[in-house]
Amino acid sequence: MPEEMARVVVGIVYAYLGVGVVVALAFVLGGVERADPRARGAGWGFRLVVLPGCAALWPAVLRRWVRGGPPEERTAHRLAAGRRVP
Image (cartoon, rainbow, N blue to C red; front, side, top):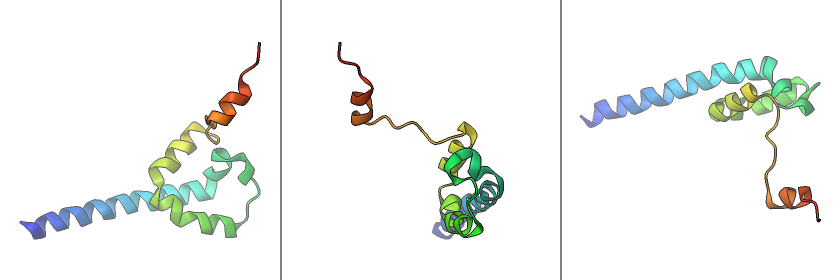
């Protein structure tokens, strides 16, 4: 029983990483500019550096890629700066 459970866990990890590699390659080859406009013109060195992180964090990368653009910061300082004093 423990051996079967270990195989299931390893299979899930392999599946996660497999999907991550596919998403990361697609993102690095074509989607990085859409997710972050400041990355336009980034060279292959940058893309190779971010590839492992994109593969490991592929759900967040995919969400940001689909939404298109960096998320808007909603910190206390930004919110306070946006308020007008009457």
